[in-house]
Image (tube, rainbow over all chains, first blue to last red; front, side, top):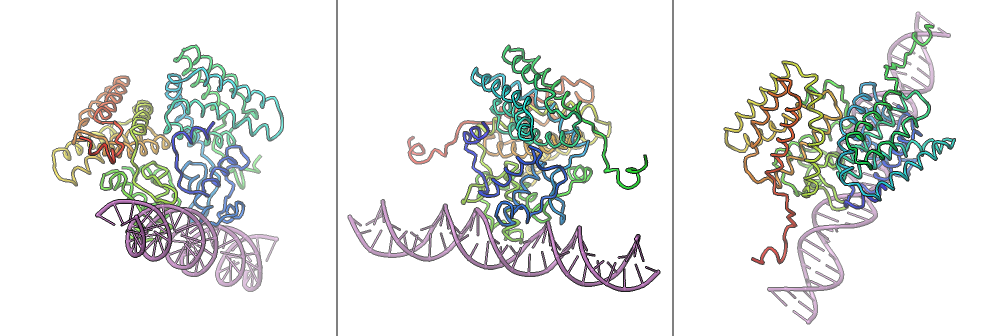
Length: 236
Length: 236
DNA sequence: GCGCAGAAAATCGTATACAATTTAACCGCT
DNA sequence: AGCGGTTAAATTGTATACGATTTTCTGCGC
């Protein structure tokens, strides 16, 4: 789905190799195979993908623009560790843009699109019932893909890219601050939103979207975890 | 103003040198000293700033993530030349996010902030009456700064960065497709928006913002200019 | 055993080098 | 003169090299 959209609008990319590496690392981060804070040294990345540090560096640099990696001068790159405040900003941004994206998507949506969305939903549900790491990762991905598909349907490539960034960063936030093990909390809500769109109840769809985002956010425990090192860790 | 905001939220940047170069080139693009389509060869950029191609390349790469530069594989980097469709998407994105940003800004705005906004407005007006390239450039910058200041006041760094991208790209679009020489068309509208915010007329402020964006867009001639090469150029 | 200076190792920042690709120049041909 | 093809120049893609900074290790003194 994503590849189709990219090809359609004649996206010519800068780097040849760095691109693949960037995508591979991003996927690893979004699927939570890489935890927040993990160090990503340029040499290691280069060796892992059999390229020079030059390309590894370019890939990490690219990820830092998306907010998935934070590079500190002279210290290296790390999988981003969003602060509670950053987390709030990410979800605030989503509340800000997703209703608008939904409206634009609804205005252009076709019966085929709705079919595809429902298919995605079903796949998501199937993965929820399965167990195992692989299924969990696929489920995380599918859950984000619902929002990304709406962005794609909006027909605005700029908003689509922005949503990709927000969804990816949301994944990091949930990995860090999520409480309920099940990321599946809002599965049914996706279906409700589609139904509302299908029924042309646009305002309701937006409301549902806002509630959905609020639900995800409500599952977070956004208290500052200052690594409670040294004394605090043993005080009790 | 921008520097203050950046410093405040402890932004640690990747590159040391590439950063300056990126900012310098971005400023040149936004102020229209560099025209869309201009080639930015890595060697030239490097020589200009007395750094190696490595840094020049990194800077161009960074600009390509912001959509201000388009790099084509094995061909090099060029100042972006947004298509009419891209232009529409940029303004569509602005209509989508700016009312929301305005609402968040209004919720946190202080009397001091309003004073600063008014000051910015006044400066903008002063520049409008002056003539000369320098004044024109400063005017372009000031006009965008109004929108950026609102984004800053929203307190959401993510939305702020997104707006910086959108404003910068808008400048490119106006340079390419703008008709009225005066970019000043909407100066008074900025003031009206501030007044509406100050008077707590939030809905009206949003409406004004949407009209303002529509006005800017209305000044564009978004017909495909396919360089009308070869025959068409001489047909008449 | 603990802490701290100093050295060694690892890692990043930037420049340079070389291969691959594109762009231009040149030259003979019609 | 105009055109196609071959070759030279310029430019990008990637790797390597080297100085600078940070981290880790070591050994000495307490």
